[in-house]
Amino acid sequence: MSDVRKAGDYTIIHEIHIGNKEVVVGELPYDSEQKYLCANYVSNGIIGSYEDCMGSDSYTEIMILFAERISEQAQHVQNELNKINVPPEDKKCVDPSNVDLIKYDDNIEYKVVVIRANSLRREYRNAVNQIYLCTGGFGSHPNSRGNACYCTNLYSGKSTRFERSDILGVLKQDKIPEWAAKNLDSIKAQKKKDKGAR
Image (cartoon, rainbow, N blue to C red; front, side, top):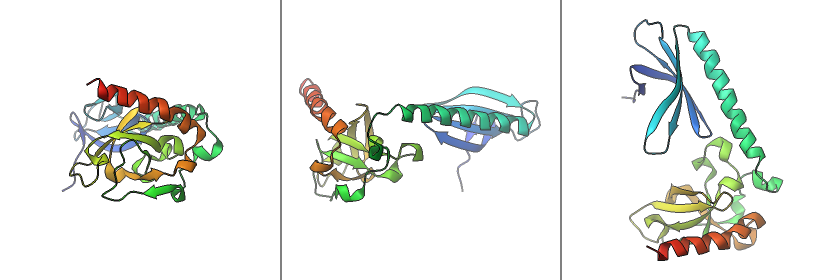
């Protein structure tokens, strides 16, 4: 039995996720002046909410709005990607030959790791969004029962949780891009300082 996704009484019938938003279309099981719904779904990974909801009795009207919102969100994400200041080769995925694959008994804490491209949404499949410093979590340790790996992006400095299975491997030392190497020492120092302050 497949899961039916709901927004109140609406059953979600179309959904496209791009960037930090998902645009959805919902349908009521009965006739109504607002039989169809278009909304943005936003989640922080724990709590999600439907925002900017618009209803109509016209499916085509809602689909036009759906298409407009997808286009706006895609343009927003493209604008953000255009601001990334790295060499052209780092706007592509990391070459797997530049990575040492990790084994079950490898310790990856405080190593520069590469996230598998297929663990990221398509718009974020590039080196800038793949290269992280793994700063801890049970999954960073060898032979651990836990899988969580806490990682800090070496371009943005933002921290994210990944599963160990999301990590392709450790980036070879001589393949670390200049922009990543520049941020690496300061991020390492700050994380160790934060850890020591607890």
